[in-house]
Image (cartoon, rainbow, N blue to C red; front, side, top):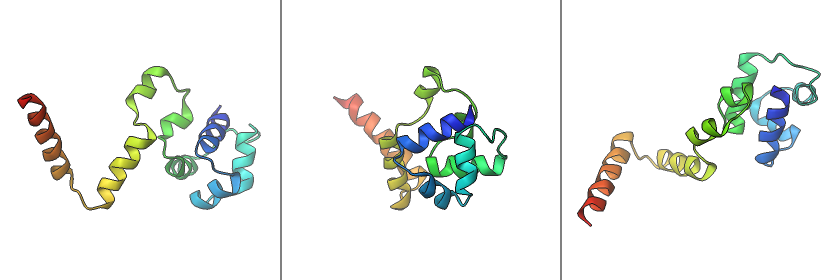
Length: 109
């Protein structure tokens, strides 16, 4: 159920219902009802807001996660690192150049 996954990701992130509601700009009562499976059909707009705050894809909220899917997603440390690079002004091209340089450097050893 979607509500169970929202609750799992919310707790994994250490967020309270109130914190999630405030950050996502949605009603706390709605999240609570969703997590308790009283509300079972959230809108795409709601899911987009909540997924953004929880730092997951909408697909992760909609569908049961499998080991195959988990391999395709970044763990939180990698995601934080990429965001830090983006916020520091590193462009995609600069990041690609860095990766290419590292590959070249490895090949030289």
